[in-house]
Image 1: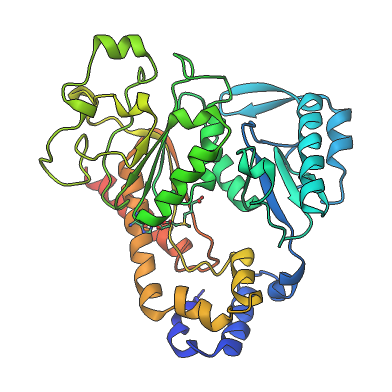
Image 2 (image 1 turned 90 degrees about the vertical axis):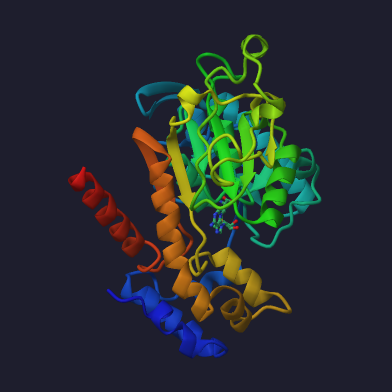
Length: 393
Ligand SMILES: C[S@@+](CC[C@H](N)C(=O)[O-])C[C@H]1O[C@@H](n2cnc3c(N)ncnc32)[C@H](O)[C@@H]1O
């Protein structure tokens, strides 16, 4: 099916009403409710309670009228399958804690806050425009804003505490921080929990925001994070040694040069020459032995740059603020040149994500666009390439 939105973006630029009609018909053609923008007025928003092991409650999706608190109390513990592990969750203890945070938040922002009926650890704020930045809970890093779809994307990686995760387009870092928390679910780093997350983003400004969010976070999981401000299409730094967290191991195997960094030899994005933009002290001090130069990540997330047409909250910001309009959205995100190049960029990002992924690893590709050109067609081109490469080996 053709993506009318992108093919016609040049013609509709500056004609916001046409564009709005056009996006509606585009959604209709892919079986998305064509009235999708009519609900822009009453969207809820979501926040994540930092430090949880985010768990889908009894499968997904759920009836939104369900009462999660009541249901969770009646099923005080539940076995959850996570990869090859079965985890026992104590819902009633978690629910009490979450209800308490929801109550505090409600008192601070003066609108209804409830537990998400689908994912334990997520709170639903009835008013999508409610601001959380001035609340104590946000300032002390106990909650962080996130879309429900972002939570589901990050959870789809099914991270295990020993996974080394690569997030190739990480800023501002909502998914990265959630994944870090999931790595921490068995407690501090150890032999059984040495997982890390490496975030990469090309935008210095956005990665600085990511760094601030990490610093603000109340979660110990930030010890597992390192960030690189560089191009995700060529990034090639291996994951850390599995003893990175062990001071004694470090003492016995000190890095050969300060910070384990060597003079650039090949390219700026090559292994062992690229300096992290941010990392915990332990992760910064590791040296990458030559034997690990070809080591790869067990999980890769490519949350690619896109046209943002599927993000209703994002669109609402453009349309319902005094300076906003569909035309502004066109100018900033849907220009012909941007759309022409974005699917090439997406293809290069997913291909490099694949090159950084170990055998039997998991790669998730996501966008906040509903367009075929940026989703199905990128995946098809990528699959074609890896099948061809495989056959010619
Ligand atoms: C959809 S946003 C990522 C959102 C992020 N994963 C999160 O959960 O907060 C896409 C990001 O891709 C970044 N980006 C664009 N081109 C890139 C490239 N060549 N390499 C790495 N990052 C890139 C943008 O700067 C932007 O921050």
